[in-house]
Amino acid sequence: MILLENVNKSYRTKTIETLALNNINLNVSKGEFLSIMGPSGCGKSTLLNIIGLLDEPSGGKVVIDGNQITKYNTKQLAKFRNHKLGFIFQSFHLINDLSVIDNVELPLIYRSIGSAERKKKAQEALEKVGLANRMKHFPSQLSGGQKQRVAIARAIVGNPEIILADEPTGNLDSVMGNEIMDILLRLNQESNTTIVMVTHDELMAKKTNRLMRLFDGSQVK
Image (cartoon, rainbow, N blue to C red; front, top):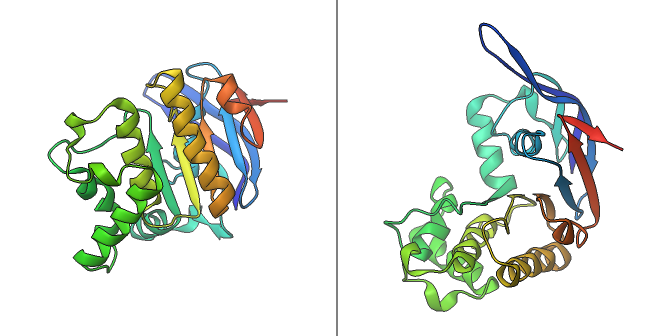
């Protein structure tokens, strides 16, 4: 489902070049739940952004579900990302002026789906994360754990084959963190959704199928 071959990422200024990722090789099978761990600044989020097509590698090959993404233009990337990928962020990235259900249906606005169908799919996604009774609330009326549930509902509303989660439990206490992790595990097991998760939490990482470690931009074996 996800294949990276000899992927490098460098950031250049006029005076210095920083190597963020060094010769990353990764193969994630369909339905696998992979954790990526490592100290701050080691390249975890950079790697996740490259897998999520939010950033381009400086070198190497990125293949998602058999598609060599490095050959796509910006419009093709946006369409592919919208249909194939779902994103969950540590800071939720909800729009405070929109209700919960409006936040969840946002990814569907970029598809040829009518308003009634968008609402239906958003409601179904909220039911899956146990927040159907909060549809008309606004993010400011929710706890951190509830906000992350909304973010998960938004990530799954378009039935993506891949979910990319960047520290999804990082801003939550252990109880809420375990609840969010249980939702992700259920999605992985029941829907065969491929999940790649960046985390600092060893206990959360041990619940997934496989653990990959990074240090200074390189894979640690």
